[in-house]
Length: 127
Image 1 (tube, one colour):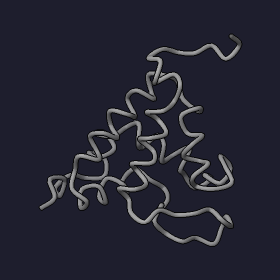
Image 2: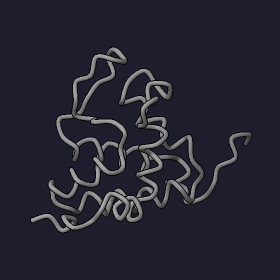
Image 3: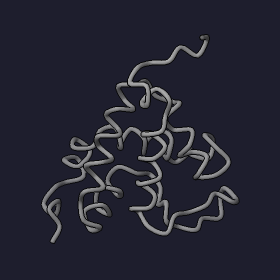
């Protein structure tokens, strides 16, 4: 049974504000402007944010992935502007994932492996 069954979309967005921010930017309606494919959009998402956002996103993603598939589905529809499992025609070669869990796991992997998150501090690109 879903533990988030009685939560509204707004309750869920309040629980996962960083993921909602990703849904409004990197994975939003104009996500194709961030990369040629969904995989490139995921890979580039951390570079669009500052360290505190990245760390908070990692925490939210770990929490999200601890939920059941039914809850994962409910949260995904509340915070994303796309369906990462759909085989879409536009943009061409966008790509898709076999499940929402696979999608969110890839997003977590991208954020966890970001150099700033790994170092635990902001990295000056000029150095």
